Amino acid sequence: MKWCLVFLVALLSLAAHGAWIDPTGKAIPDTESMRSAGDFGVQIVLTADEDRFRQAWNTSKTPPRLSTTNTVRLGAAVSALLIFHGCAPDAEGVCDVVVEFVLEDADGKKTPAGGGPVWIGKPMQQRFLQLGQASMSVGFDKTDPVGDYKITANVKDRVSGRSLSVVSRLKVTK
Image (cartoon, rainbow, N blue to C red):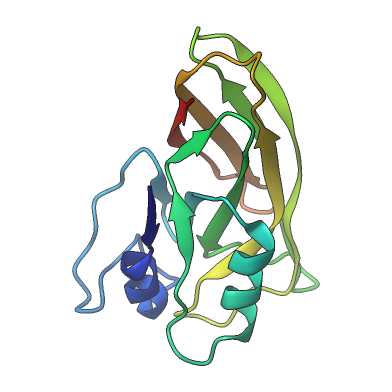
């Protein structure tokens, strides 16, 4: 099922100096897919079309309509993307945030699923969210078991030393 991530767009007014907050400034409790540690926060989202998601994120001047999903059929693929705020800059003003992804299949088997830089560069100006550079894509063929999968992103801000793990659940169907 695809749904528009209006909730995420509402978070664009987030203050980078605190935990996740709603547009009225009220703190939003952490969930398994959205966590924070001090001023550093990460959210994982799944999409069936990474290119379209990134294009909507990067080109929209108004709140973008971001297509996300939590289900995929055998024969299709999904991508896991990270949205974050509050990375700590080093002495040169550059953030260094990295991720390692893990895929847990319907049988509970965990498989390393790649990783890389979420963000290496100047931090976004305060009160804005940033779409991470790294992503993980996974396709499912007829030999894969149907059922409930989990994608975990272990994210580390190498400058501040803060680490967060976020999880997105995925239903694989026939």
